[in-house]
Length: 270
Image (cartoon, rainbow, N blue to C red; front, side, top):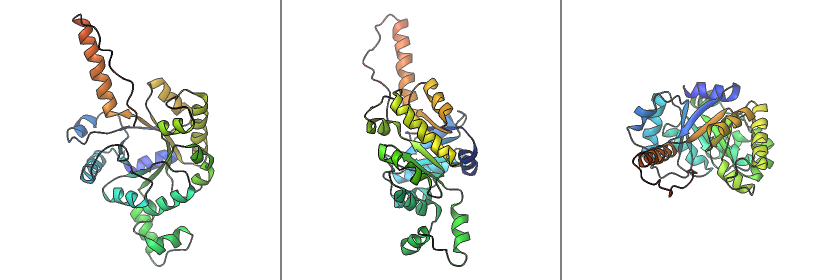
């Protein structure tokens, strides 16, 4: 899938499926190429990756037909522009709560290379002179802008956020949203599920994609799609490694008569 195809699908259909890639190992793309993924998610907010690693990952996965969606450290328009320069197909902006934040990110992702007063005037509605409008559109038409909805204020302001032109999808950060709702990691709680469905429904009604980074079992993830999500980030590479090695070592211990190791903890949350 190309970034253009991903963008069209988010607005018009879906679902599309990806996973969080924690490892920058050059062996990883060879393994992931035939796993049925539509895109990959790279997270610089919570994962220690330097800029050269992120750029290498972006350009490699994009060349494989796996558009890389990269979350910035903060909702900074400067970080968003940097990641697009480094090869990201799209930017995921964390912890958005205000429409004004999205306007700035729109400038960074949809109106490059405009900066300063020229950018502020354009965001305010002033037309661009000469050939600049066509140039900016052509330069940025394939970029994706995705905003994390992770708090009660974000949900309360969702209508205004969705009215900002240029958003390609919203994405629920379930850990932060559940905590903000007072239901930490209670992803089956009715309050969390109702809030998630509200976010999905409002975004899809506007022709904007709606997604979630889901950590539960496959049934719970399918439920989110049935509720309206058309972008699903399925766990993370580190989760599959952890679960696989834990479960198979437990089986080996059982087969040779050893007691199972009960020290394993729950899921990884990022």
